[in-house]
Length: 196
Length: 164
Image (cartoon, rainbow over all chains, first blue to last red; front, top):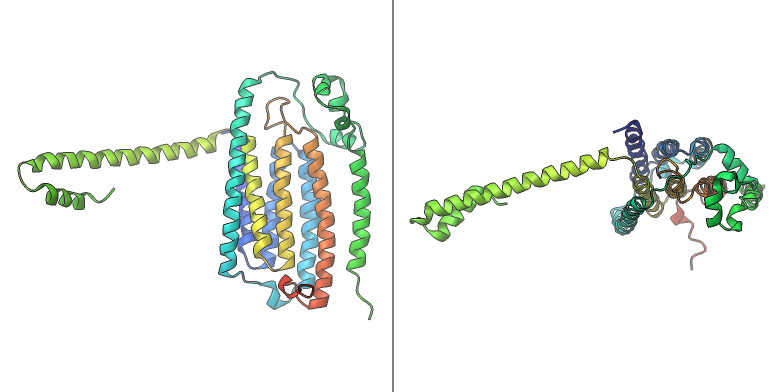
């Protein structure tokens, strides 16, 4: 049992505990705390999976941005009688009836993928160059250059991928920036105080 | 397995107290011992499997299971809660469950040497998901503030004006 496994189980337990706290608690502030716990643990899982840049972004955008936004939402809309909203027993029954088949189906597919993957891995044992996704690769992909695919090392992958997948992400990048501008203007317009 | 003494009395009632008593009693004790050994082996096997599951190296399935748990918790939160901000928190959990899957399938650590199905694409899409989630949270909170100033509550059941 190596250090990665130890940290994985620790972070996975934290993430699951946070998610369960979000679901179970009737108090909205406790739910926000559970969300912070779950998101931070997920950032740790990203670090463990080798996506360091994504882990940092998870902490900055989610834990630093979205959760603060949610906390302000809680504070601005808090009224003592509505902070705490009870969930009735029949709602729990419906939720469990919904969640149990969903979880069963998803867990079965994850299990099936694991078996499929182990069978495939025993077949293909050819070892190519170790590929690591760094923040440089991500940034270059966002401006339309993908050295991992286009470069000299990627000659084997180049045949497998057609031209459209090698173009990088400059169009989605521009679209998402435009989207962010529109969203920020729209949110500021929506949240303004009405003049009466 | 039922209790031994009760079982013994049933045997005695069925087969009498005659000559076969010792024989039947021996068979009975043998059967009880067998079932106990079976249960012990069963529990040992379960414990071994659990331990093997914990001690085995982390694969992509582990990540998928964590993502599934977050996803299902988010769905349940979305269905159960009536507070509009709690529903938003559920949406964030759902998006994070999806993000875990994307990162797991793009991870060079979880797949041996360049066999990851989504090497760069998964991380880029997870990044886009994060950006869009932040945008969605901003708009949804603006809507929640308007909802609150109009209805004086964040209970979504109170906003039924448009329903017929």
